[in-house]
Image 1 (cartoon, chains in turn cyan, green, yellow):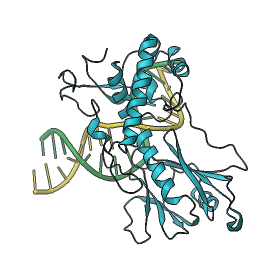
Image 2 (tube, protein in one colour):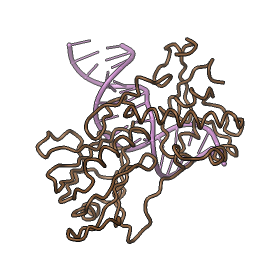
Image 3 (cartoon, helix red, strand yellow):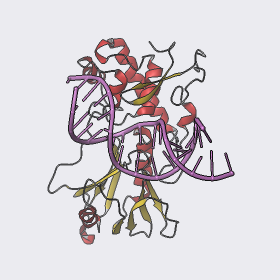
Image 4 (cartoon, chains in turn green, yellow, red):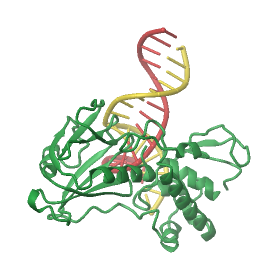
Length: 279
DNA sequence: ATATGGCCCTGGTTGC
DNA sequence: TGCAACCAGGGCCATA
């Protein structure tokens, strides 16, 4: 389940490998509904364009695309391709003769002779094409957890009364936090997932922001968490799953106090916490 | 404003 | 051992 650190890792990897390349041909499989932009329009929009840069916004990977005029690519983006990996989506840079994995829904032939492939068994991913001549650039739904200031962070939560776990998962507040990093940062901050946001003290909100920063930063440096079968653009697994303190550790002893980790349901999501360390 | 539950979808796990 | 039922969950939607 790619969240901010996994998406950041993938975006960086793809950026390094395809920046300066050009999309020469596009193939879309029978991916029915999950395209935000219909496949034919998407294929037409992508074909011929230079890849100027690839970066992350929230859980979205944004390709900045130049002109399709080969003689005049320029440096100003004219279009964007936005990829959301959902639960099981992958972006892979391969050679054309590499075996095509099951559930490969998109293949972009690059001028360098390589391919960019989108694979997604569960089909929760979304692909969108945007022309910047017709519309505004993509903006994430919520604030960036890595750069949000303390005051802005506190302001997001103090007027609401939903469980803090639900608030962390709400992408229109903070974009990029998912189930793993919500649980881990609440553990690091010592806050119970069901606490109401408006009942959190300024001190607790400060701790939570710091914990979130620390956890996300650490996870990015370890290449993300490889639960299920996440791999980055080079097919390499991350290592942050080895650092998980609570996520998917139901019944195992808390790494701080030995109390068994508990699992409850918050906002319909499995939620893991230490009943002693988190108040 | 918030809560709940269904839907999408497949693969891994569990239960008999 | 084999097979079916079940569950995971990000985002979105309808309903309470």
